[in-house]
Image (cartoon, rainbow, N blue to C red; front, side, top):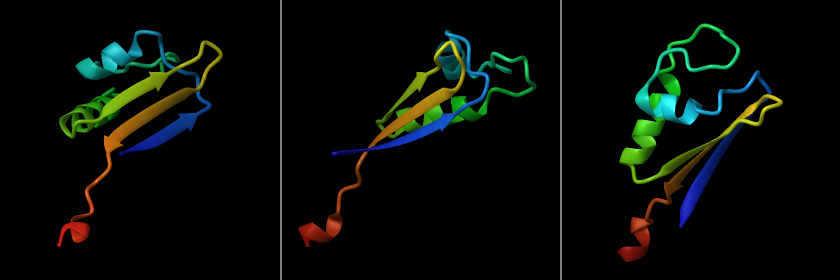
Length: 81
């Protein structure tokens, strides 16, 4: 089983290669030229991957971005006692 967390915004979007830039931790990976360090999503992607999960990005040309984090569901250890 897994858990999916979806985050969607209606901002200016991200460039088509943003997922590559994010995994590299590139600074300022955004489409609108707004200031940013570009480390937030890179950190999330790194942590989710270390936990055995995945991160997917959807950024349509008309703007907005959706980030989907998928993680394995925790085992309920109480069942095994």
